[in-house]
Length: 212
Image (cartoon, rainbow, N blue to C red):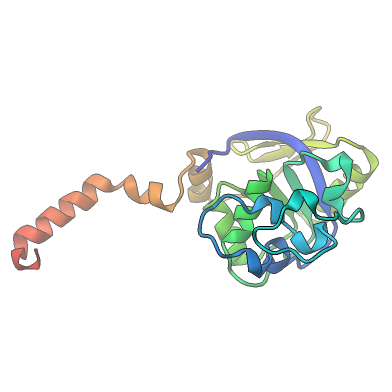
């Protein structure tokens, strides 16, 4: 998993509350357990004017000019600002996979659905909870200043404008922070205890050899 320490990127606004995981990555694309390849179908029903299915040539599909990620000013955005309860609905891990595969490194919202929130940390994606009035200010700044960027420092737990005129701290638990700083997914966290696991297995077999 890619580590997250510091990131500065272009901000895209998704001015919708209660964005569910089926909107993030529709159910017809959940046929793979790989973590890659979902980016072209992120927000598929909103990005395209036709109905998407796996295997389609997305480059040839008609784009919805009214959807924010299709606007040229947000091309290459890597930080998404959204409204409350982002990631609600079903518990599919494919939702953070699709956001990360598209190129997003961080999400900012007043609140996230719990399961989605936890799944983000397992995918190297940083979900940041900020007060609703602060998020509202960010929406205003993104609209007012084309090319609006934010700098995120996980070690310092801050979100700031590159010039330092705006700085806002955010909370994160120590274990989640460690996971992201060191790029540790669930498998990597388990392998960190490999010696202890092998020692336990050896002791178990010595005491109960018939299990072998």
